[in-house]
Length: 529
Image (cartoon, rainbow, N blue to C red; front, side, top):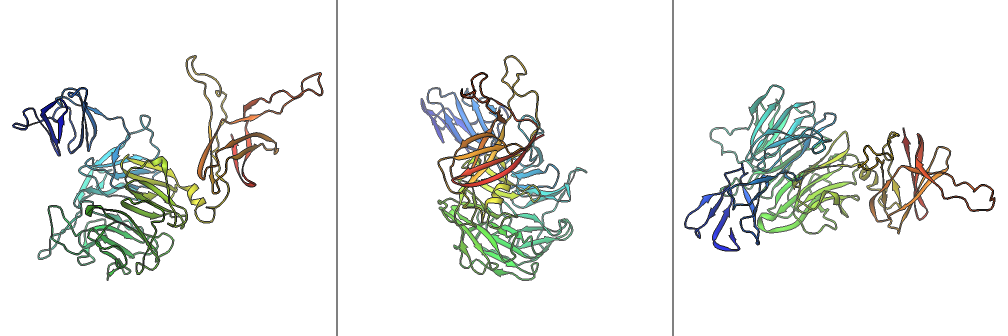
């Protein structure tokens, strides 16, 4: 509820619709009907200097009105979005898929650039939930909306088939979590898994289903939203039929025989917590990671755990993280020492298997809900609940984690570029000159006041030298792609000082880039084509 600062009889209340009263609540009228305003309102600001000017925040973004909500303008130029889940396909370039709160299911290129390339496209409606594109055919996608309402989409045929399993006569009705999990088997994409209170499997692209478990929840009393449901499911990428299921009421199970039998493995974990993710290791069959959260019971601690014996025993991998609700944890597919986690206050990486964590600070400290590492491109794709989707190159982290964490300096090879005659020139008299840039990425494991950067040509001549920050962690030095021409003595004055060296754009050729930190060096190659 909001009350106008200059009129105590002007009141706004908001939830699904937004209502306004101009007579202290005696009568009410909707005020979100003009201008195609999105529903599900969460925030309202009234300008204290002009009460007719209001800002409204809802599941569709930000809206502005200058007449107390009679007409609205959608301010739709901000990179915001509330993603619940994320997935990828194997196209080139690959596409990113995600389910959004109250904004359906979206698909977009991993290389998209706002206002320059094709926008994201709608695949489905509702509150978008899990999305599973077939890795062999991106035109075949499994997805849906809240409470287990799922479809098989054959996009090339414009054919949508409802696939949600049904309970048999005499059985308890199925309880579907708000964010019902659905995944494809990594060993055969024709096999689809879903979780209600029982674990379901289809061997034929969701045409037919069978329950491969009994009720895995605590079967607690129901309220107005289904509870005691399976909230997280997973299959080991190393062994078909090695399955895990976690519930919203604190149970965690493993099956080593494709659902033939199930063993409870939540002993040793905090009791009665929501299992927000379960992630089997891509490196070791017995290793599995789980995240738990308890914020629905006002418990905002960080719960991240790892087991090396199929869940018989657990150890915390919270490390140095501050207390914040944990939504997801995964292990990198290339480097077993590299972990990623998504908390309500940001996305983090651990280079030492959970002993210490660092914030991936360019992703902002917003809720991180889901993540995946693309199996071919080795890029980390993160779904946030507030600032949409981020894509980051994971290869530097994959090279650092484990044995290279304590290196003084570690350089990463920059991409080659092509020489251009346009460099240094203006396209128009009023425009800026065209200037090249090469971003030199490097890692500092032992902090220093500065590190030295040296560039050598094919004859091993030092052609450029610079210094850059020695802060611990990953840093970037932006090189203007210029090299130094050798200084020449002034004519007629043999002992006169040499003229100031001049710089020019590096010509075509191969170069060596050396970085130095207190005697430790790291070298990479770079080419001007």
